[in-house]
Image (cartoon, rainbow, N blue to C red; front, side, top):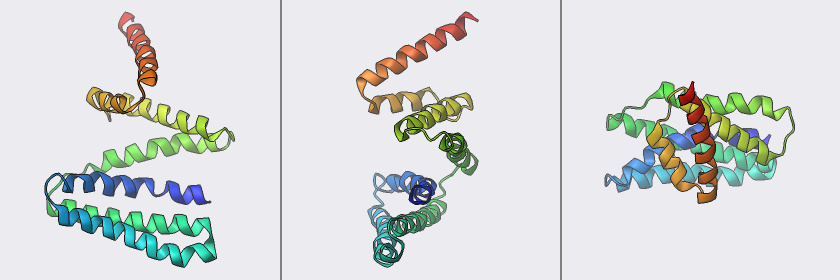
Amino acid sequence: MTLQILSLTSLPTCIFTGIGILFYPYGNNRSFLLLGLVTSLPRVLLYFLFVYPLGKNGAALSFLIGSICGAILSIIYSKKIKMDLHYKQILILFKIPIVIAIPLKYFDLNPIISISAILISSYFAFILLKLIDSQDIEDILRILPSRLVKIIRYVWGRKLKRQNEK
């Protein structure tokens, strides 16, 4: 149950993190601080209330509520500064890994294998649906270990060669 609760935090966490990181470089330090407080305070306060009666589920629930508070405030801020949020794309990016993860849950695979399958399949779906472009892929590859990047480029290069031959 704890992992299911924590999985619900991914969308609000992505929203407040994605919007929040834009505040700091644009000099909106006060907004950045307030966003951090609105996210962290409910997490900490509710942690004390929920952990004793609910255990690790209480910790996950407090994290979820704090994440939702941060997402709500960041959406309010984004509307104030007229930031264009592409809600349809955000929801699609969120749904794809979930749709892939649900059947994998029933195979009772090693978590590392499941997570890897979800990540790899999701990124292939993102590419096929043109939700990410080549620049996004290059950004992703820059943060990965060089050995893994070599393998990815080798496999991806073979796939591109086969497509070009057709």
